[in-house]
Image (cartoon, rainbow, N blue to C red; front, side):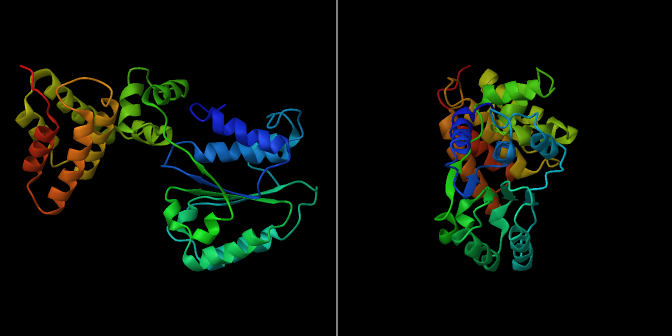
Amino acid sequence: MLKGLETLEEQLLRSVRTGRFPHAHIFEGPFGCGKKTLVDGLCRALNCTGEHPPCGLCANCLRYAHGNAVNSLRLLPEKSVKVETIRDLIEKVSVRPFDGGRMTVVIEAADHLTAQAQNALLKTLEEPPEYAVFFLIVERMSALLSTIVSRCAVHHVHPLEEEDCAQVLRERGVDPQQAPLLARAAQGSVGRALQIASDEAYMNDVRAVNAALDGVCAASDIPAAALSLCDEKRDAERTLELVEGWARARLLKEGVLDGGRLLGAVADARMKLASNVSRQHAMELMLFAAAGNLKA
């Protein structure tokens, strides 16, 4: 079972095993939160011949694991998916699997489909082949036509809690001491945390921002922390995202900086930076706005 997604995964697998699995699904959630991993498991389960799908041992499961599944179509992410691409996909879907199995159709980044492409897909979702199951993976369901959404079962996939994310990272070989820091920086997204871990410059930014904020809590020195957050070598938006991750981790913890107020202050800082307020001034205002009773 996927950590943090056990309930949703079990519900979906139960519907596969009972033959009550809808023909189209939307999985919405931020990058790296497990949407694709969950969908891959469902695709295996739909054609698994084992007793408890997905068994991981039958011929169909092994073909899928090695990228050789004959009943699987996948549209990889593109900046913009045009109608011609969808028409080509639909043409392939119209060919019934020779072994009588289920055809799984995975559209990654379906929120990048143009309106024309979505309308072309809509016709197939309205009258789908009985052997086909569609999976639309999105970060922003608002980018989909309401008519598309209405014909799909919708599943919201949320990032993991920080401790759960850190545990998954450790299981994947991440340094145990770095795992909590990465989980916080990625705000519970395992995929994003793994990306950060492979980027040394990004990791240096994570360490610097966390050290600056921890320094405020230790010494209440907001000007010094703001100056540290203003490193011109570091992207301002990345800094604010890391501050958000730190703040979310502190929402239930006491300290000099109030996590809830800091999240609101980050939004204000973004607007100030967009209005050409100096970076140091914006960071100082952000930290002062989030400061509670400063401790000496």
